[in-house]
Image (tube, rainbow, N blue to C red):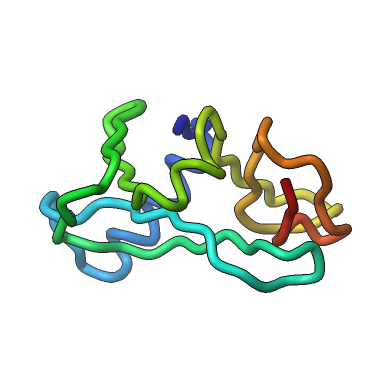
Length: 107
């Protein structure tokens, strides 16, 4: 997992706004749902699980459970605040198809 500078800036801003300290990290996962079959999920967490895969990029710790890792391997998290849509987006080389809104995918 990698994170772009824009996404790092936004995640850091959200963590600060929620008053989260350095013990917290970004948890990224995949669940069934969405118009393409699988949806991305993000949350802040401070407890790792035994089978979690841990990544650090640009000083941001990101954690992915093993099941989600199979779908997210080599993905990059980005953030856009442009006219064509504001929010987090994943560049996922494992996705064979994504929906129009970019919030779900299939493999």
